[in-house]
Length: 298
Image (cartoon, rainbow, N blue to C red; front, side, top):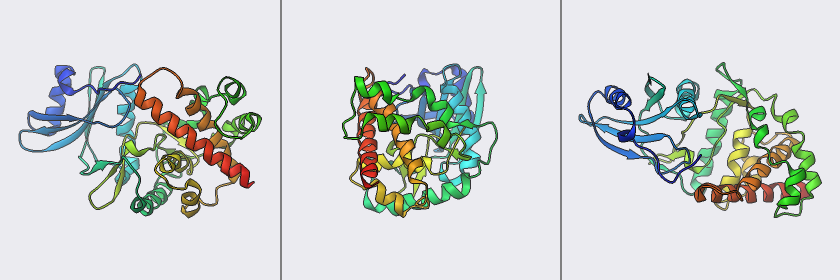
């Protein structure tokens, strides 16, 4: 489910608003909903009467949204300064509420050349901090993703890819998704894109929206992010070769690209929220273009 409009705390139960006020230490006097993102849960910067600000996420459990808020609480300690600092968390009946210290800056809307050095540093810090996975209660990302795979065997007939890669090759790569990715033992963010990264005034990048209790190969988050850089004019292969993951087996990367691109290429043509579908089409095109270039190089 996606929506163009995020819900706000004013629409939440009284107990939820009271819990946020308690975390603030004062009544709420202002709220600004996050503009970025696609998840229909509360994600707002709130201010208290005394001037303190917090970034608040809140949602009921039952459809995955409240569960994601609760997962973020668990993940905050593991992520450390890669993301915002957890200020507190509360359970209000079936609602889950998490409050984070506000990261001053702006959500990245375009990757600049100045961001690349910092991104490579973030990738290295993620490798050092998150592999092996520092928490329990996690599941392999690759297994959870299996129902979302595009199935290139049939997708290639109903919606041929916009590249010259034979559909049989895409299907063969996709068929090895679990073999390649399920054994990975690093904590996996799982959704790295511009709208989940904040650029601080000094250029430091902070990752937000840690909501998945997943493991994967440590390089997988970078592979998911690189097509987003490609959409801003950067060469994903060149960035990978400059990264701490430059020596990842080429075939493993190709398997990941085939699986990710199939899901994005299928879903971007489905009915749904237009911003999400545009993002998925952009991701699909750059994933496939990168995979095509890699296969042509052999």
